[in-house]
Amino acid sequence: MRHRLVLFVGLLLAAMTVSVDAAEWGLIRPGVSTTATVRAKYGAPTRVDRQKVDNYDTENWVYEEAQAPVGVQRMTVEYGLLHEGKYRPEVVRALRLEPKPGTFNRGVVTNGWGFPDRLGREHENDIFLYREGLVVYFDASGWNAQLMVFTLPQPRDPTEERPSR
Image (cartoon, rainbow, N blue to C red; front, top):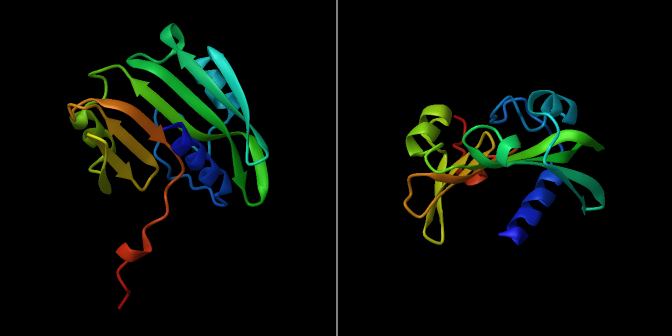
């Protein structure tokens, strides 16, 4: 899982465009929100993890236990985004929510973000993928979300595009 996340972060850092139509949660929108807007809404994080990704200094703000939003075990806000050739360390790159069981079930997810653009599976777990930049991993029961990752909008699969007539 860690290897996939490092690869995922690297791909996001390589993204050269930022859209304001990203999926969002709790007033945090990847590509738009900054350290200042997150701190104003959620206060100081429980801890800050700093790392270097593709030679860029990044930060992850982790909110756990009492500092996490209601219904969430852990919220991690990842900072550092390359946009138009300029690295912006204060901009949210991704938001990771680890909800408590029952907070986000399939019904809540589809009511909030609609039906997914794609369905996937990892091991025995279902995954919802949204082009707007949301990936939802469900638990083994297939009902409760165990991880929600909000990112920049994802490019369309060119094989799905219909030729214009």
